[in-house]
Length: 138
Image 1 (cartoon, helix red, strand yellow):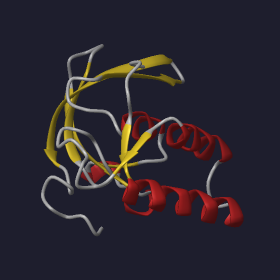
Image 2 (cartoon, rainbow, N blue to C red):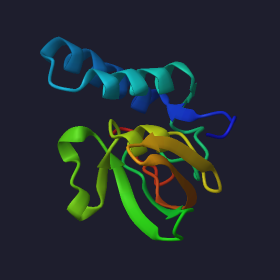
Image 3 (cartoon, helix red, strand yellow):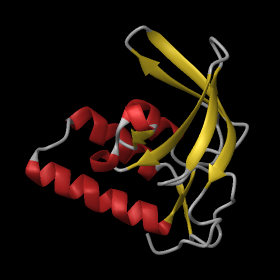
Image 4 (tube, helix red, strand yellow):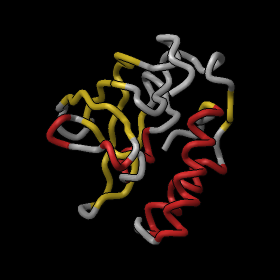
């Protein structure tokens, strides 16, 4: 992954912390997924929703990325696990790709481990970001 600042809004950070706490108490989510997300949250820069740059992927952002191995592009939305549906292009923030992408910006190259080795993508465009659209109270 890039050595750069990962930005997360105060709102997203709070909701994700609450989600992690609830998931731990109920045991409804895999420990590895939660650990990776917790690590991302520990290493991020938390900013006001009004201060987040408009090209950063936040929760509920719709964005386009390119797989750097095959050049394929996809448009997806980053969501909480309960709203995830790959067939509709909604990826969970607790999935490996979702956790890896959260807080990165257009032009960033992100790499993470997959079963077959590593996956590398580049964020090409943030099509919709709630904060940039003035939706601060999700």
